[in-house]
Length: 113
Image (cartoon, rainbow, N blue to C red; front, side, top):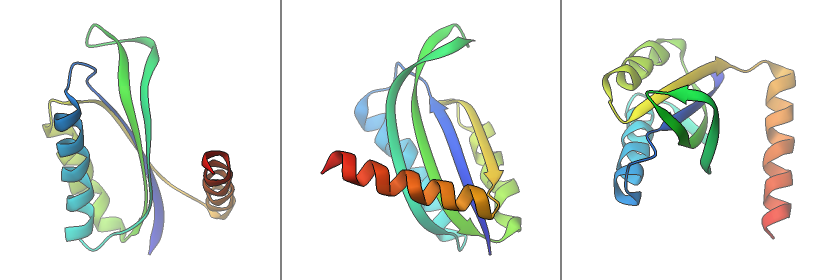
């Protein structure tokens, strides 16, 4: 089982319901294909560094999951097919990145408390 992290940007004109549906769709895809969700983060509406599809902002989401490598290609294909997704990036985490992600999660939990 490999450790992966996906960040994706959703179109800023979507309603809260549409955003929740989209996030749920990709989470369900991973779970149905045998992946185990480690963490999910909603980073909210952020300004983009450069316009994408004539949009200057987007809703950022992060998924951290463990899975076999065969799941990633069909998972990314789903991102390409969905018009609500402006950009996405999936990376395989090494041991240093896993440790950093764990530290970031604990830092975020203490900041919210």
